[in-house]
Length: 102
Image (cartoon, rainbow, N blue to C red; front, side):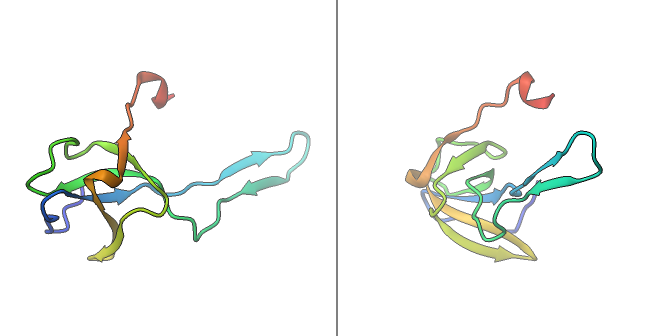
């Protein structure tokens, strides 16, 4: 897990955003591939908690969380982009099931 050497203040989380991935579709019977990549300027809305303030108790380090697309403050540490979100900006934790791995 990433550790940028930063602890957010009080009720804020430091989130490492997930990569935005497009989808690739192969057209049957041909050699063509349709790439439906997402807009490269689109902000992610899911990430992993990598640090939390002293008053944060809702989400643990390593939890996958969802947040609003325009929430938080973007911060760059050692070549990596992070988001600093207040506890109220985190919408909830993503529950990973065995079906997600397939």
